[in-house]
Length: 79
Image 1 (cartoon, rainbow, N blue to C red):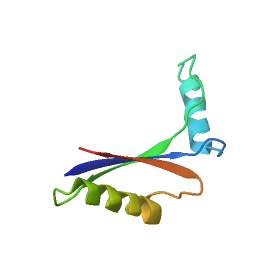
Image 2: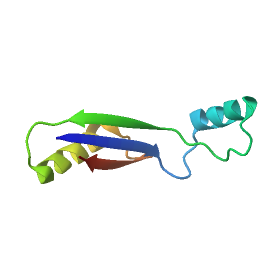
Image 3: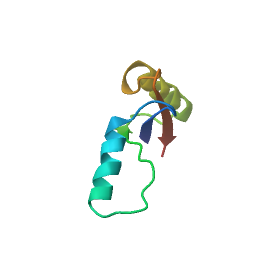
Image 4: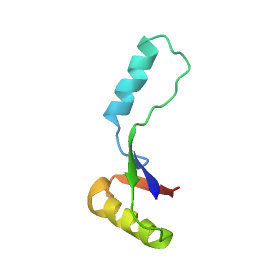
C-alpha cells in the first residue's frame, strides 16, 4: 500500500522560505506570482492491506514525527 503525506504551515505562521521563493520567482521575471507557501511531501510504502489501520498509523506518524502540529497541518492520502 502506498501513501502520500503533505505537510504545510498553518495559516498565520510566517514562511520565510516561501517568501524567499516568491522573491526569487519575481527576480527571474515571473510576474503575477502571489503569495508562495512551501511544505513537505512524504511518500511512504506500507505492508498490509488494512486501510483503516494504515490511516491510523500514518496519522500517528505525523503526530509524533513528520509534522509539528503546533504550526503545521497535514493531509494523508492512501493509494
